[in-house]
Length: 300
Image (cartoon, rainbow, N blue to C red; front, side, top):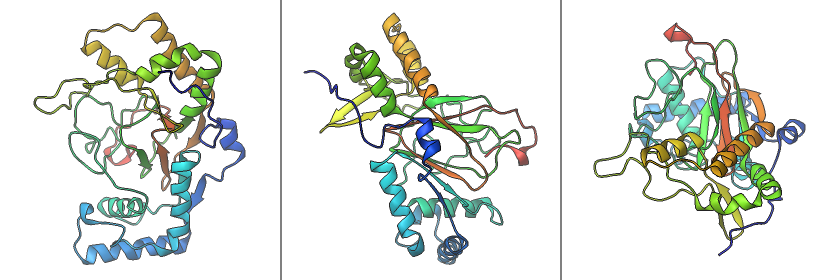
């Protein structure tokens, strides 16, 4: 059976220049929205609810309904990338910022853990609160290449940025697909077949250290193409099972990386900014930053 070989011509295929020209993917909270978030926070605190007990039903945000609906549409059926500015991170204890963040996100989907610590909110930092799971390099100061994460959507809230202001980056995996289709269609069958992924030393007892099936880099169902690609996890998985990448596979990965960078959009992620990325259609990554010695000033 031949894989899907048609170009993607909907909103999910974009370039950095497209996002620069049309910034309707960016939203900003008003003072009224922030006041409503505070009322919702005080309500769950009065009831003594823990993070996992906060739901969209008990964290009411009626004035934000239109914005959140538009964001959800953009994530699912549009560009797959949304930036929300003005989220209140100051004047609150960190535990309360987490409740505000979680409560807001319950209106967009169901929160899940994606590591063996089973935490629902992870601190992306090289500080003391950095996740201690497996072999992932979460929060290290070095640059992070463009990739997808494991959940349907990744959400990144900036509580404190590094002083040298490293920029974040996003890229459309559908634009990359179109470029592969245009320049190297012979690669698509191998990309649809997929590769094993490492479990990053987070497997449970009895589980293999790699996925027990090949994870397709691209998939298609009912004419909808999606992407699942993390070159580092794939290469580490192949090392664990003793496989060598072929010359063609090495060329594929290089092409994906270079095409992603060439078509990416880079942007500052400042205190109070929240970036949302659909992991089926959007890569995310960031620049590196200088190490920060002071625990209280570390990027978070």
